Image 1: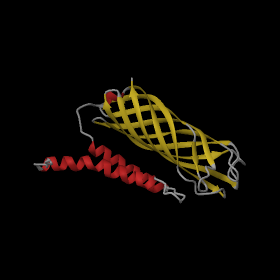
Image 2: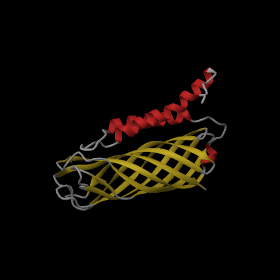
Image 3: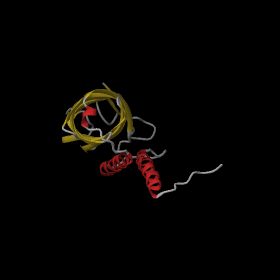
Image 4: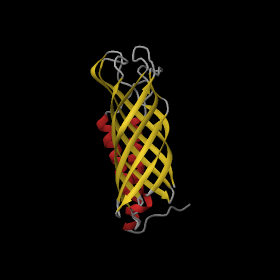
Length: 241
């Protein structure tokens, strides 16, 4: 069996570009996978850097086209899986918390402005996600996560690089020695990259960070100014109408 080798410098560069997303995505996944027998938490700065590197690699692998922002105009709806990394701030509650995975849905509307700019609004929902505070025990849980965001982005070929800003609310359950049932809310912001695979199908990588104020007295060891901080990386697939 023969192996086809690149014949020109152009082919070699194209092959190298195809490898970048795989390398960066694998590095990203390695950083967030939990090692059995340990409590693992990715620092906020590291998660942000890994996300930016992955977004850059994915964007570099995309092929440019003459299409403009108008292809993004319209309604859309999709499903996502989110890796969430929470942390108690200004609290003596059991920390760190291990990452958890939640599944959800999102939908919204985009409007193009000029050849390259896109502005839109989006609603998102994510279901239960459990976070371990000791091995084998999911001691803390987000029962549901709701957020509303505005997005602003720049269209480049079939890719849309965007930033987002909005408001998020979380309902959490009772966990012995950690919390009583309650809710928390606060600002949410983030960055992301979305790419059209076809005229009506897109995939995206979405990073968000939020700092939420919980119901007073519901976090064990909490004090004035306590917060629940949460960073999340989501992978989504959407249909456009």
